[in-house]
Image (tube, rainbow over all chains, first blue to last red; front, side):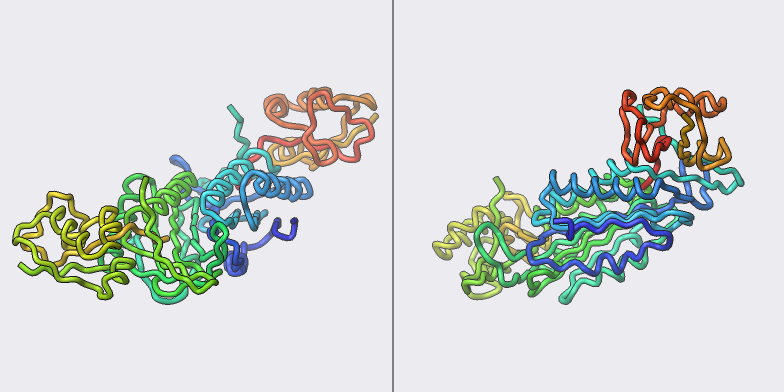
Length: 143
Length: 143
Length: 81
Length: 81
């Protein structure tokens, strides 16, 4: 069943249109997509740009495991996870996650679950470059 | 704030790409969208095609109210709701709902809420045309 | 007075027209209009109890009056999306 | 034995290299490797307790042995998405 998974790490703009175009499947009733985008403001700090780095083979494998676990838990027909690495300027997408299912609840739940898990386990890190010239790796500590 | 709402009833294919293209807003960190698609199988019945009809002015107004209520409940930057009327063959989208927000939880929650509400209150009806030649208006009775 | 009620979906197919003319008092309630509509056919008798009445493009309570209404519509259970 | 540990993000910036060589027994546990890494600098002493160790591209338990490992990597708290 792995043909229904499309997992990629990319170093350039995510080609959103080409991913979302290829969607017609007669057994699908619901398609849901999420784009994570670099935001200018976090609290009172202003972001100029973000840089993402990864343990690439482990991140690729981690995203594949994530997609497979989503297929086990939810009734999905297709899963797409694309994560961009390197610089991702404000207003551009760092991640695209999409899925399709016969019924919409599976796609909604899977999308939120995959984003939560991605942020929890996949070895990808972002470095904030603030407008004041400082930079900072984001290493959130789980509570 | 109504410029951030885009609500449409259309009689032809929903142009998903045109909405996605126009998505860059520096205060947005999350963009999510949902497509409802005509599915071939429902239970053991095989669908050939669907027809949608609406009380058009009331449906348009209903979708606008929905989008405004979503903006009151969730921290959204933009809401798009496009519903197609007339024939929607298997594999094509009958509805596109999308939103953007600083944080992803608002977009996920708003998307699910808007789809639930749309299906509950907006005067749009679908007629199933089954492969066996029979047709049937879908008038779900709330329990 | 004579009142035109807009019909949709299965109700329109049953009556064979996108509106129906019924006779009700000037200040009839939505409930009375619904009751008149349910008398139009055996199918309508089954469907109407699950419908809502819209007066001037808004869902109306059972007690709402049609007096002065520009448009009255019977809204069967919806199935958009 | 001498073990190369891959470093990422703030750990790599602190050490100034994308790997570090440490001296540990052949059958050292992940916990021992982490302990050695935390001795490398005051910054690492703070960061390492929040990190996970990956052996051959999988997260390892504290008790897992590095014996025979082809790759050992220090994985700081992640922030993808």
